[in-house]
Image 1 (spheres, rainbow, N blue to C red):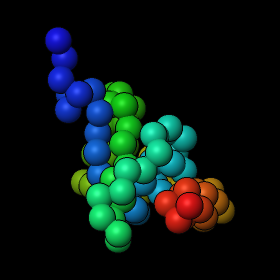
Image 2 (cartoon, helix red, strand yellow):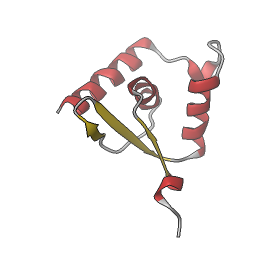
Image 3 (cartoon, helix red, strand yellow):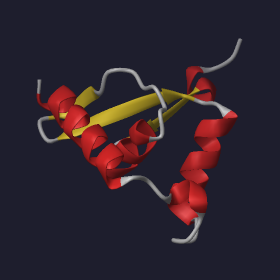
Length: 85
C-alpha cells in the first residue's frame, strides 16, 4: 500500500502556492497548522514536480517560470480569500 506522503506534496509557502495555482495546479483546501500558518496540499504529478523544480531552481529567464501579472494577482486574491475564510 502506498503511503500518503508519496502521493501528495505539502507546502506552507504562500508564494509557491500562488505560482502553482496561477499555473492551473489544483490543490485541496488549505489546512490550518496554527493561527498564522496554513499548509497547502497537491497530488503529486510529473507536471507539479516540474513546476516546483522550476520555481525553486530555475533561471529567471525560463519560459515556464514567467507568469502574466494579472494571472498571478488573480491567483493571489483567490488564495487569500480561501485562506482567510
